[in-house]
Length: 324
Image (cartoon, rainbow, N blue to C red; front, side):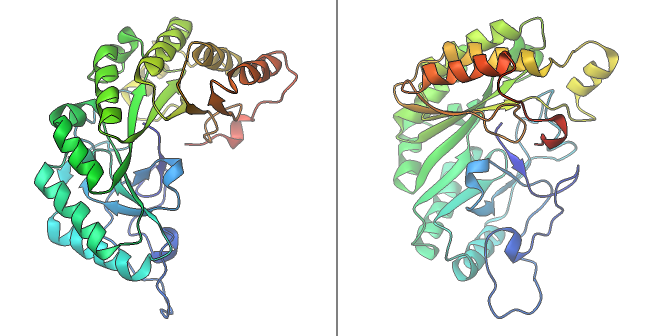
């Protein structure tokens, strides 16, 4: 999952969040006041940094991936309609510069259709200047919605969905307990695209360890190509304490690959990726070599840049500057 944490524990900012921290303003107020009913860890894609962050669920309905500690100990639930409506009303007053809304947390699409439509209609009514609503969409939630329901959400303002693929390698998907096969990921990604959403797919460099690194890269490129998303975001694995994958690392059962290996993995992944017209990002704070490439137009030049980095001609980001 492609994210930046802004609330909760583990080095991230703690709720409640005040007006200035969400991009919203409370003019005339001498002191920051508590706004929106934020709970626990609040995450969003980096591209939603300037969006109104409307938390409609708490946690993740799956919450079993071995590498993710974002919602550790958090029971998934949908927030009450009155609380959500209060937050939309606050945004209507104080977030008039923001043109986009992102529905937090990790699993907003799983909200029952009638309730989700009610939220979208309220956004349209109270925030008529908003041009796009975004949300995370995992394979489970996409499977639960019919194509007609997804198109209905599109008609009510949902413009982009973010799907965490992580890897296209079935063996690695099973190891990290993702809960879906590569074939199912392809099917669900295409389903989102066919509904008219812009689709952003996140992949995770290093998640397969050294043994399956190149297989992971090749298979992920294959799956990305089959989905043909609008955006691909590649993050580099950073181990989170108190997660099953971190425990495997501590015991020696999992090895974190070296920067050069991660870069070689990225090269293979891009080489195996064919998009109709997509943007491949590897410029997240976790990455060693920032990349932003239009594929197919800039594929060859991007591979050349990676080759130069592998040859030591382009410096990599030092470890202390990497972050989630």
